[in-house]
Amino acid sequence: MASAQSTEILALQAAVAGRYSIERELGRGGMGIVLLARDVALDRLVAIKLLPPALAADRAHRARFLQEARTAAALSHPNIVPIHSVEEHGEFVFFVMAFVDGETLRQRVERAGPMTARQGMRLAQEVAWALSYAHDRGVVHRDVKPDNIMLETGSDRALVADFGIAQPANAGGHAGEAAVVGTARYMSPEQASGEPVDARSDLYSLGATCFYALTGRAPFEARTVPAILMKQVAEPAPPLQSLRPDIPPRVAVLIDRCLAKSPAERPQTGDEVVAAAGAARGRDLRAPPLVRSFVRNAEITTMVLLAAGATGISVQVTETGITSVNIGPGIIGLALLVQLVLVARRLLRDGYAFADIRAALLAEAQIQAEEAEIARRGRMMRRLQNLWHRLWAGRLGRTFFRVAGLGLQRPEHTALPSGEPTEFVLQRAAVDAYESLTATQRSGASAAPAVIDMLAHRAERLRQQGETGSALEDTVGALERVRLSLLALQAGEDAARDLTRDLEKAREIGERVDAELDGR
Image 1 (cartoon, helix red, strand yellow):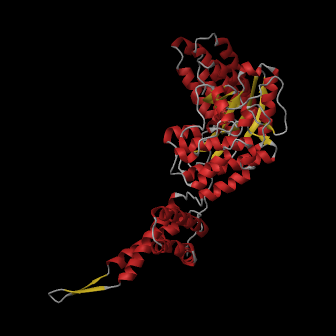
Image 2 (tube, helix red, strand yellow):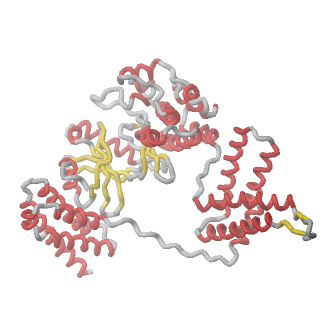
Image 3 (cartoon, rainbow, N blue to C red):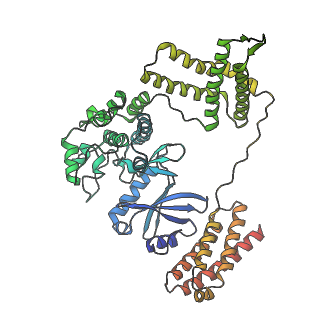
């Protein structure tokens, strides 16, 4: 929840009480303050980007912010952070977007160092998909940079965020606006010169962003912004391999092309970058843990069984005349095969199919082929290494899964419930605020705990009956206002009268909700 010291955020919370419940500030820049919040009606986490009040007071900035937020809200793509709504509440102007659980590309590189070539090409491919989609709809981002690319936790999916200075490709500049808009280290030469930009400008910025992802630094560095802009316009970008000699030539060529000074020498569309990045990246699949377990077990089992078949049964005659039969490899192979069957049945029970395993096997084959090429292994070794992939990805694997699944019934999985409802998060926060008051303050607000508890349980009953409209908004909003009054009292403000008023309104709302629920 917003801290008592953040009066700006507390004022916004009071304005949106019942619709959104603000958790904390995520970050801020010159064009906005980003907040983590809960959507009360849908009970989900969202991010709110608030236009700073000083800019919101300016009519031109306010109109531009709203227009460009609506432009971005029209975009719907798996690699673009979706915008749910654009709203005005008095002096506050903001848009609400999906909350991405992850980190920015800049944070990733600072934390883990430069990316590998394969990771960099996946990044280039996914961001180019998003940009191509926007360009096809006449929208140029104009601020592609590491801070505006989110990497989702778990999947590492790249999502392009903050179309805050995006505009239609054929739109003119805004009245009174400076010609150069964007981030100096990643903007194209034509953007740095204040000239009109098109899709190819975004592709230059994508090249500069991937250069950073692969090297840990931007193509051009200088002490001042004008000096960086001068380099963007006049100096050729350093070849990628001059900083990362280990990068494959196909990867380096793509990034160097994107960083060409002339737009005509760059890739002309995002789709062209997608195709080139895909070819340089090769097959890449991060299979789920259970699928990877099957792939590893299949490789080991195949090699052991092949070794057992090649060596056959060895007979040894000792001095005592006793003959011993070496069946160890066969027993080990059989044990591994049984374990493989158990893993396969677990996969089938969890809803996986042979196609999922086949995709993971082919991805592993691609990775091993690349490793063999770098290690300069002979043709015979490569064929032997790829034998197990071909066996399990083909008819043998399909038959194996069919047999392993005999008599297996897949249980029906019920959907897991969502996270804790907003009203209970607010209830805890309000109780914490009450308990933080002095003894004298608590005696004057002794009715607050009962009212807080009443509101939380009324909201719970409404949600159980499928209510997401005004009754739920009013109830959660009343709870939010009680919490804010307690925070103001905790901060030493003269808010006792406000708290009394909010408690009275809360009781009225509770009685109205009771009547509505009883009527149902």
